[in-house]
Length: 216
Image 1 (cartoon, one colour):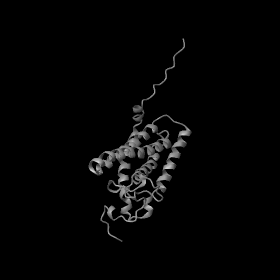
Image 2 (spheres, one colour):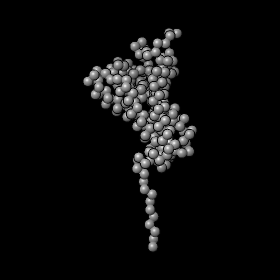
Image 3 (cartoon, helix red, strand yellow):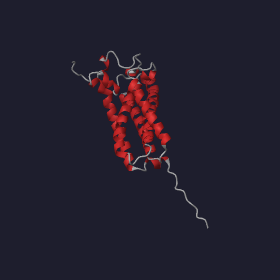
Image 4 (cartoon, one colour):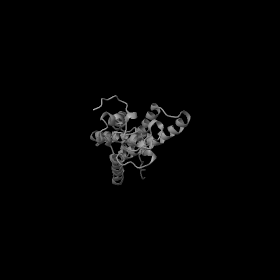
């Protein structure tokens, strides 16, 4: 009598997300790191005395793109740190991180423009708390996607190459568009919830200063 071979039941998305405690802790830690590091990079350009090299990773105006930039670089820094500790426990690292860092800005944009589309017509402007919340939503979404693929079965070389390609493409975009911004609304300064017609590094930051730093 032939024995029936039973297949192991496939994991649900939720079961995959919670299957490796070490990875879960690292991905949850990433939510806090990216949020706090991003907050620092939001003001790093001013704290540096508006040094042009710092604009490589720090936001230089209030455009959506410049906010996405500090989330991206915070995520990349965390990715490099995390790799050292989870490389032997995680699968699909390049693809997971590429997808996570791609999903974060997409969800941030969706959440932010949905928020702005509601509050600006009603109240004329949004709030800092509302904007921060849209960023946190994007970070959580990106980390959940990353966590899912890190705990999924190996996806093969093709997916690894796709993930690496995403990381390289995002790095090139966030490295150059501050200095050479496309004339598109995503890159236009959105100071006080109003488009100012300015892009990239601004000529005058008088109205943008948060800290009362001494002039050199």
